[in-house]
Picture 1 (tube, rainbow, N blue to C red):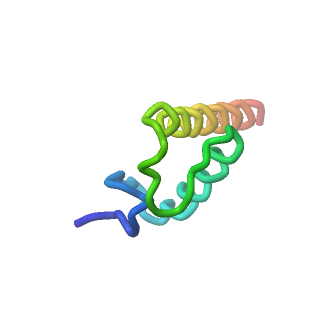
Picture 2: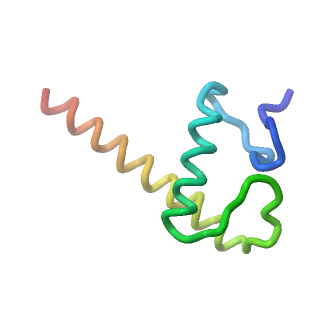
Length: 76
């Protein structure tokens, strides 16, 4: 069974299948923000460094968001 719905999602699996669309949207927003020309479909022209930068920046932003939520919950 594969959670991959198209070629742009690769072989990555999502723990929460309902989040796939939001994660894909987030990936393209991050790529645009950092200037990586990620497009839907084939991206074989991008370097592994460019792809890694997108993934790493996504993780950084997700951690920052979680920390913010934890701080807000701690202050309530």
